[in-house]
Image 1 (cartoon, rainbow, N blue to C red):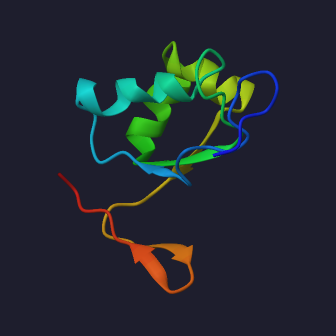
Image 2: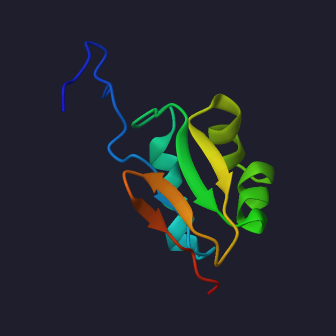
Length: 94
């Protein structure tokens, strides 16, 4: 991956994230997409409405939303999410 002069990557290391459920070890890693690390822009994070609300309402994750590092995409369990090029993901309620 090419590095810009400021030492930041010019592209997110992933195209998007699916959060399956709210275990601490699952969502705390989102912090690495913030300003101090990768500093992504508009990275789609697919989550249930309840999980998305939690991220919007609690720090430090709400800062990722406010700054625009991540973009929350509410996914309804059991409904496929079309990712393009014939690829879809169907979240299952856990």
